[in-house]
Image (cartoon, rainbow, N blue to C red; front, side, top):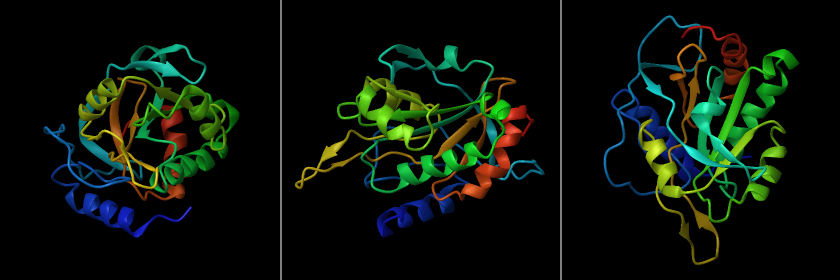
Length: 222
């Protein structure tokens, strides 16, 4: 799905700002209140094609509802597992479906054994509209085993902010569409310490995920 020019400009700005800090790069515009955690790039001979982080962020404490309507504790349920984490919303016109679709294509190229070792978690930034059923239907088109979480937006915003990702409250536009401005980074957590070691910016190509996912499945150090 093609990205809009607006999104492309935002993604480009994020790439330029990466060495200093990552903030908003997403499906909307404007700035959030407060300061997100700093996310800096580290030059390294890492085996990963994604951006290796100099600061390894803890997996956030986040308890929401999964697509089966059951409580889901992010830390507990994904403990000791390679995890890709992305914040977005199902009615996003460009970045969200493209990012999740690319991850889905790359996941399908893993062996069944490798796929079982990687959790892909999508956290909604528009929980009022993204019910568990809506999330499941949307995610199934990309990955039937993808984990979808929805619930208290304040909790979601706090969890994202701890990772250097800003999220704003959804805005209903005059035509009835919804814009949820959110950081469009994907963070990869390694099973060895449950910390984020690798980051993927908006616009990351599918081949990058295809290269890195087998490494994540094996828990290769970044």
